[in-house]
Image (cartoon, rainbow, N blue to C red; front, side):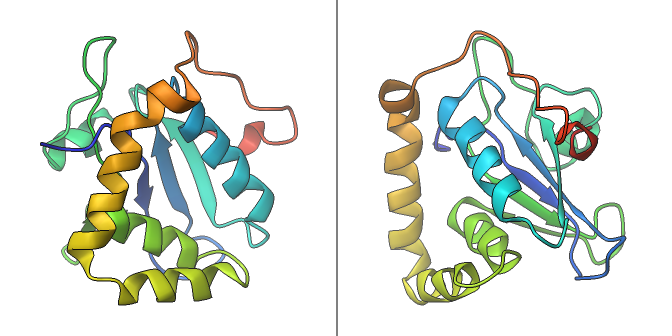
Length: 158
């Protein structure tokens, strides 16, 4: 069974200034919202764009990868990183591989942390991911509404 971490979907691949990553997250999850704020503070190269998983802009992309748009009863339970969406070389990463991919896009020391995590066998990394995902609402809570971004960050959200 998929972990219940919501969706953090990243689209993109290279370090070109016009090739950004789209991070799709569970807007009702406090942990996910804190993670988005954490990424915003550290994204000095303006690599990320964000959208909540319930956004109509991402429904087709989620469906393409076998995930449904969440509703109150069910939340797809994985992080999904999609590079080169809609292109022949499209690549999807999920769970801990997605986290490692995100870390690699941030300034130091985060790529080093990602490289160290990559040394841990995927089975163990994903087990840790699933434990956190399973307990995320119990530990960090669930929001009734997806919070609005601050005015200075609004341009980074779809």
